[in-house]
Image (cartoon, rainbow, N blue to C red; front, side, top):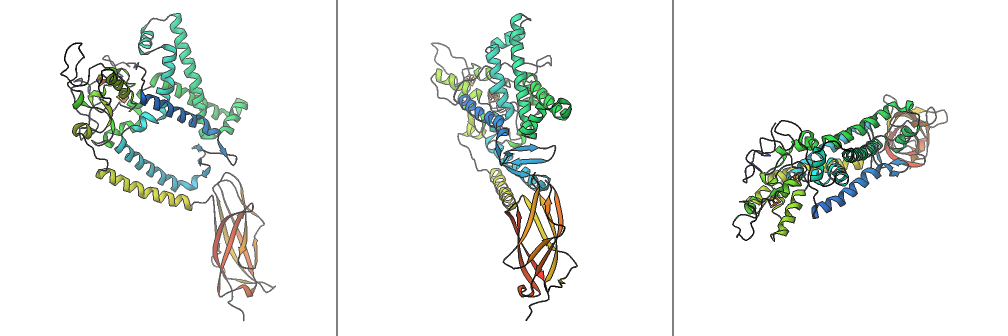
Length: 479
Ligand code: SF4
Ligand code: SF4
């Protein structure tokens, strides 16, 4: 299995320093015997770790709190992929909005590409739920229950004793409880808190599907965070695998300044230092949650967690050197001291993204929750009524994109006349289509010609939904 190495054909991160010669031929998570090699990273500390901790609190509060936020008695966000019901910022989207989903997806993909081309895997280190949960929740439980990285490794390798059973048992019990909460939260994002509460309180036999989803989600999270861990980023994550084609020499990544650091060498007391600034303390490797050495260059396994920056900055402060031997920077900047943000590639993606955002904004602005069409019935002319009035028949179609039944009514605007819905009222079922016929009756004095322009107001529960412009056929102006 190939590990690390060059991330793209431009040679970013390839052989820029004198790191371990065989780092491309081995994986930090696989032992020489081909078995899983457990990683016990040292707990990071430093300015980036502090900022990441604060951000993770905000993100976790959003994740766990948002399913409870409601607007007009509806969830503020809902992603019910099973029933194809979606609510974003309180606005309901359904199967009829597929075209919007397609444009939004393309826009999202172009944004991710552009963001990655410029900022590398910034998302992975700061915002990705896998990293936030793994490094900011579950890893902290490890430190709390089992001690620091050395104590964890010792405990793992030690024979089973009462203390080991107690510590491991406590840890996995907390893991299980947290996984259950995360699994239920995910379910709440999909089906909403009301339905989740019904599943919890009703007899189990009435919600076999919901309970199965609850158990499966909880089980999958438990498996990921207790066993699979960093392998999710290294082996499975498609975004991680795409780095090879998305990054280039100008992308901002977490990089080791080999020009400043090399040749590396230990500090020796009383001996004048002739080497570079890297004192080969391996602190950057000890804190790495994927077990790599950033001095070997940008590698697939690097999730941009910033732990190595914090570790090296602490070392640099201790030995009286400037911070930033490991830092956010581009390969070009490390090599030459300067970097370009607006490369032709970035400009190209930015233009495409701007166009897509414009199209999406226009589509969203023009979108209504209830679409109503009123068209004169094809093949019908006008009818002379016994009371002297003239009538026209129209086909009415109401597309209801909401989750509630929508009763609609029609009013003539700016013209005196009568408007009648054939068959009484018209109401469109949730996410449904309702069709009917509309009869409009005008006195001859209201006609302005063979075709009289008409404006019809469409209302639901007294609230205006739409204004329809159509025409009314008649015998012409009566003199
Ligand atoms: S922490 Fe800094 S000084 Fe220590 S090995 Fe890593 S790069 Fe070198
Ligand atoms: S190399 Fe540094 S930034 Fe990348 S995963 Fe390891 S510690 Fe995090």
